[in-house]
Image (cartoon, rainbow, N blue to C red; front, side):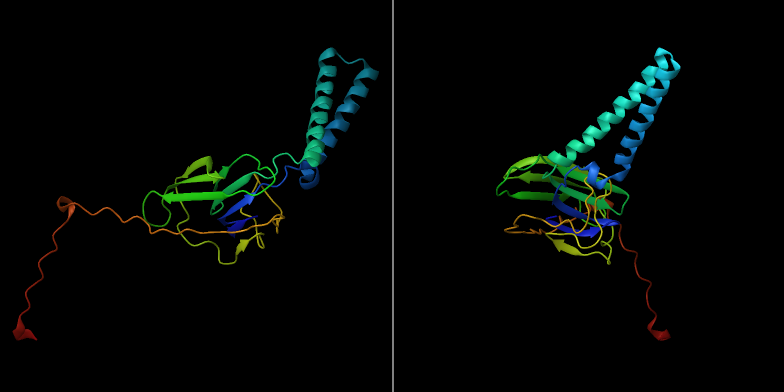
Length: 220
């Protein structure tokens, strides 16, 4: 994690993606692969002893082959850390929708990561466009139909170099908190600019204010 504000039910995070490691972090896929492998081997053994038809034997072999591929993928990602180190900016809209900007994996050494976001119009909850750049080169562009119309959850926190509360990601690029940054963050800069002013109304659309009722001073 480089910087984050908010969490599970709304917020944003700029981070380097964690390793895509099914074997260590996703027990479901590990159990699924092992279960299908055992099931397929039992089917193949049963088919050989019972002289099943070619179709049934083909189905059992397909299950074994698919399970073996899944386990191979899981094992490989645990060794080579596929997908690790990609710059990611993720915006969590109240746990309703997550918009993601991501670039290619970074090489070792110093890098400058910039996320630039501009709303289309003033006000909370408006649409906008964002650009993620690395070392002066644009790597991802995306837009949002809506921003968060309220403040981020008050029980969350603003963190630099780690995430001390809940994570903003759910499935894609999910990480385990505190997800500490293991390198060095030399500088973190927020550049805030004034929101664009709303367009002035044309004279044809301006309605004249009603004339006030005259006041009778004798009734005061």
